[in-house]
Image (cartoon, rainbow over the protein chains, first blue to last red):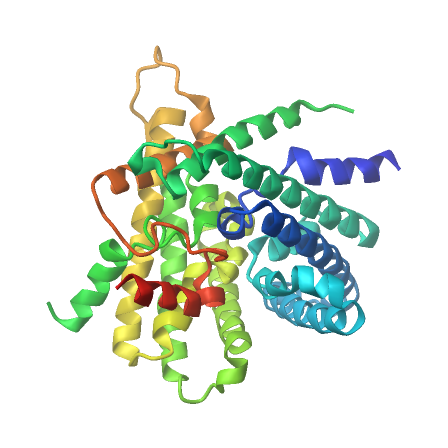
Length: 192
Length: 225
């Protein structure tokens, strides 16, 4: 049990997917202008990464490994993730229009979010079983959400500030990310 | 300047994918701890980019518009798998250093972005030059970031120690925060030098990935004219 909780905490804080592993930087910088959009994207990412980790873990253990087709994993995973995002989108549209309305435009963006493929590949690399993969996926996605919501909060504060001209736009956002990353390195001192 | 040289210049300087278009940030930040890793990653991506641009340009009249993105993804994923196997076989040290970021070339925004923005409309020759220019632009920025980080954080250049031992290197630069800081400074310096482009400010609601919101970027570009 302790081991499973540890996987979630490690995924969310210690190995934060954005600030320590640099996955999903594109959307981290692009969709963090407004708090609401950032939170919606975070929700969509938690949803998709958790399901994608479950599906790719099952596929790897029961199809790719028995057939000895380990080298096909990149192609299989990216296609599964793309298809999955489409299915999730259609399913949500049909069953819960409210959630679809909130997450709708962000779902297609997630296909090319490298965090999803990154988590699937890391799970395989670390030899996680089904339960561990799902939890690690969930933890990672929570870490992503924490990071993007925090950045959106910071950006809403710096919007009114008088920033030197060359630093406006991307550089100041990256500097905020630097400071957040330094803070997150502190979590690596966590011991259980 | 002829059309082919223009593509090279465009990729290297005018629309440098990392520093100006802000594409492919994930590998830039992640593997720039050493200049050599930067070169390795940059050249692997360049190889995939040239081949994917070529294949997509050759198939541009065959692939139906409705399923083009899945088709591109399959092409790119196959090329990346081949590259990964080759690196694993012939350059094992690079394979160990880059790790998971090699398969992640698949989701590098630069590749799908160029497929969508250029290769699916261009003749094969120009598409190859576009891939080469963009790839080299990416390699240069990666190597530059790698050199700065390696020098400041490790006191060495291309693995050779250059600082006397009495000077303690600033360890944080080879750790994750250093990546953000160095890229931020490079972009700020470019801004200061006045290289102005349409994408310096990220487009609203854009996730930085041209494959997803390419049309939106075009609209902004038109509006700015």
